[in-house]
Image (cartoon, rainbow, N blue to C red; front, side):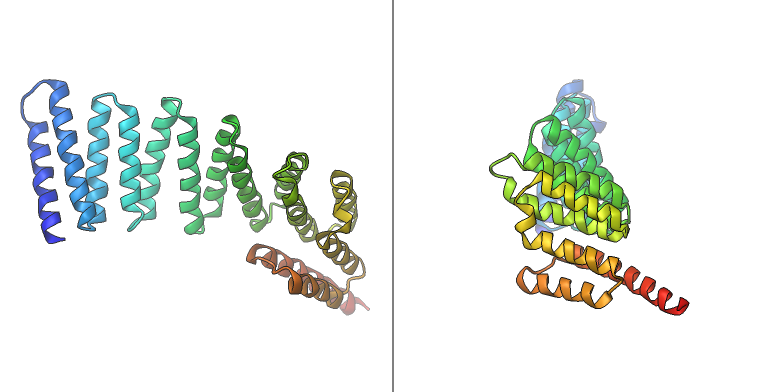
Amino acid sequence: MADQNARGEEFEKKAEKKLAGWGLFGSKYEDAADLYEKAANCFKLGKNWDRAGVVYTKLANCHLKLESKHEAASAYVDAANSYKKISAQEAAQCLNQAVNLFLDIGRLNMAARYYKELAEIYEQEQDLEKAMDFFERAADLFQSEEVTTSANQCKQKVAQFAAQLEQYPKAIEIFEAIARHSINNSLLKYSVKGILLNAGICEICKGDIVAITNALERYQELDPTFSGTREFKLLSDLASSMDEEDVIKFTEAVKEFDSMTRLDPWKTTLLLRAKSALKAKEQNDDDLT
């Protein structure tokens, strides 16, 4: 590794010397780019991620001088991949640069892909607002390129984060739109009951019994098979327990469903939130009597 780092420094010095010296404008940047690429590869092999990121950024600048935006964007992606090992913030900055260049040259599919990657970085950092923003941008671009599956995956992420941030109407709107879009697609229609369950759980968190009842009617109109599913039964039982302000009934409904189909952490978090609100309401009513 020490050898690789030493070789990387040597190539980097040669590149700097090329840029500082005289020569035809284009050729000196081409020569420097070649040397920077070799240097970056050495630093990567030496697991010197910070130096690799710095040198890939220098390589991107050389490509920009040569007006090779695609190559510059690819170098920024390489820089981001190196920085991911040590600094989410640096990685995000480089991916942002890459996305802007891909947008400039009309490579919308690539831009969408790296918007999604940016969103995933912010998701790992627990910055849900930023993650939501970049998943939305990725979804829009995937949609414009008719990459429907990827667009829907990103939209579902937006809806999940919106719900976590208690933006329930936004989450419900997105989940229901995905369900409507999926119901007539032979590959996607089997996912509809799960998506409607997500939308219904958001309605439960809002706590408006009339809205929950209306939502369940909507879901049955959208998918006539939904009323025969365990997902529908769960939502119906939860709505009934909320109407009766019965925390035990609420808990039993969740337990019954979970014993057959394991609830994921997202659903569990929201259902616990709804249960806490129901418990507080029940306690408040007890205090008043």
